[in-house]
Structures are given as C-alpha cells and as structure tokens.
Image (cartoon, rainbow, N blue to C red; front, side, top):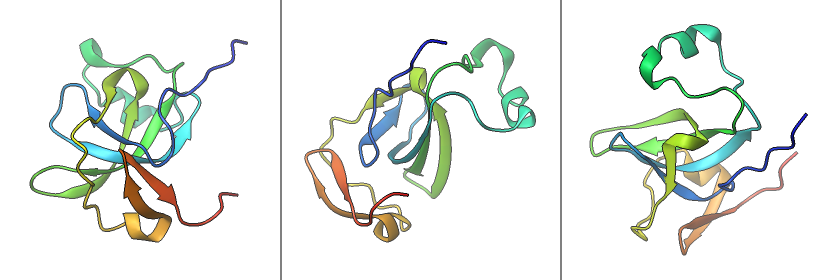
Length: 108
C-alpha cells in the first residue's frame, strides 16, 4: 500500500478549484471516508478518485457558512491573505497569520 501525504495542513486556508468558496482545514482523511450516497450524488464526470486525501473545511461563500468535504485535487492554497469568518473557527483555532490559523487546543 502506497503512503499518502496530505498537501494541505490543519489550519491552512484553501479555496475550491472550481466553486466559489474557501475555508480552513480542520481535519484530513488519508482517503475518502464519507458515505457512498454522498459520493454517488456527485455527477459521474466530476467525481474525484477515492484514493487521495479528503479535507474537512470550515467553509464560506459570500452568502453563507458551512462544513465542506473536498478532495485534494479540487483544492488550491488561498493566496488572498484574508481571514475566514466562519463562526466555528474560534472553538478550534486561534490567531490567523500568513494564510494559517494556529490550533488553540491539542489534538487527540
């Protein structure tokens, strides 16, 4: 089995490659770990491979905040230098600096 290394880190601000949202990584799955129903709901011609890291994000658009689950191939590092305003960030992260949020508490 091939070892996988995540391209992005917990606390890093990223944006979706195609859709207009950005977010902060708060967890990483080394490969797909969501439901088959969720996976099948993605149009077949744009379904990502399951054997890559998937990221849990505190995501935001201009209109709303939510939690997103995104494959590595669909993310890019955010270069705006702007903080994310998601209300759940304060429970897990501290200060924003240079595209990253510092973890506020130790991980299990």
